Length: 140
Image (cartoon, rainbow, N blue to C red; front, side, top):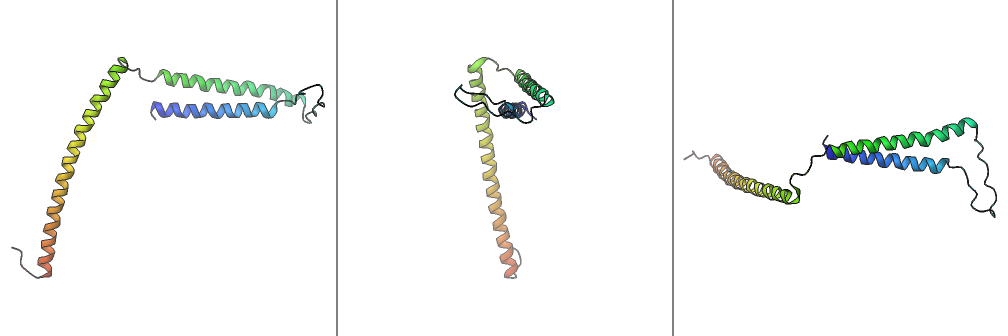
């Protein structure tokens, strides 16, 4: 797998972890009284000490996974090749590649034209052969 694909996969991983982390924090957040005029929010019926401990530990684990994914992304970015010579050198390289692409395209066009010419010759010979067979003529 190339480096760009790995970076894309890592970005997707980070997005998924962030989505799940925020969703879990929102889901498990205790109810909060917004103002003194509002009634007290109902207590969570499953607020056992064991649940509270796991709820306190889960954000830490999810945060650690998110940090590890970000570190992996940084490692992948560091593995990217550096641009040589700046923008001017890159533009020169692009121009060279474009010229090479044009030359190859012209060569392919010539080959296509030669193949079309050969196809027409074969089709004409086939037509003559079928005419000779249908007319029971001997070939010239």
